[in-house]
Image (cartoon, rainbow, N blue to C red; front, side, top):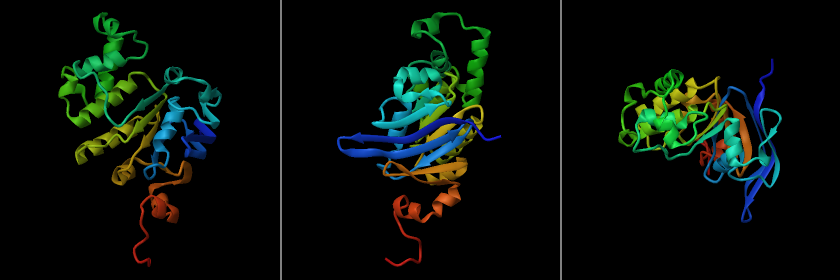
Length: 254
């Protein structure tokens, strides 16, 4: 059976002050897929995430979620409620609250900080929080103040906060920035463990990390898809060598 698209972008264009950040972009993603998106600075990677989440609207084109939902007609809040979560490069956690409370505050359907922190926690909620903490490798840090976590741990906590919203699609922007090699490897293991229950898009520059996690890689260049394939396929594509790696192959003249 052919996989079902969770996301389909067709003919998308976006211009900012005369600069075409997205140019006739076609992008398709299967449900339960882990997709890695790479490309040089200015390739349109962040703008792609902005268009999916409603932070920006395309000038033209179609963005469909789960076959029949037109994301271009919805605002950021509505898109988030559909089950699309986004993690930015810099972790954003409640630094004065415990790790456990950070997950609690993020649980799907909670209504405000006061209600979340001072209402009775149900056994089901406690079990869900503990399961999320185990998933992100912070099961033994639940009572820690989040501000005292290491950088990598804060990144994992924020991924846990997204998981608490029970998202269908996670958009993760450069999750390994500033991490140690060990933290980077653990982050890769974490992201791979989320599929196929969740669909995940990862924007990344670190090609060692990309090689660890990538099943399918999309290369963006000047706002369009340059090529797609496995890590080996894209790294051996002459166009990628030229525009993304910024060099010619060894042995070539010039």
